Length: 68
Image (cartoon, rainbow, N blue to C red):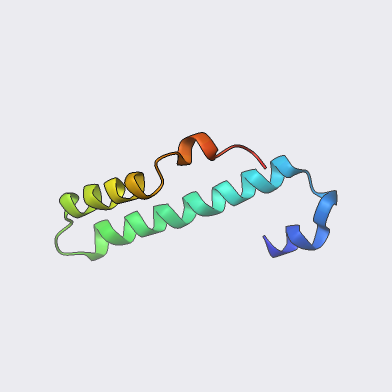
C-alpha cells in the first residue's frame, strides 16, 4: 500500500481499491483462522454480539461504502 501511495495518481483508483480490499480480507481471514485453531472454545455468541455492535455503531456503512 505504501508503494501505491508513492506512485500517487499514476495508479488507477480501481487498482488501489482492489488491493486495499484484498489486504483487509486477508487480515480478517487471518483473525478467523487464529480464532478457530488457537482458541480452546470459540464463542459464537461473542462473534454475533461483535457483529451486532458493528451494525449498531455503523448502521449505514453498506450505503456509504462507494468507490473513492
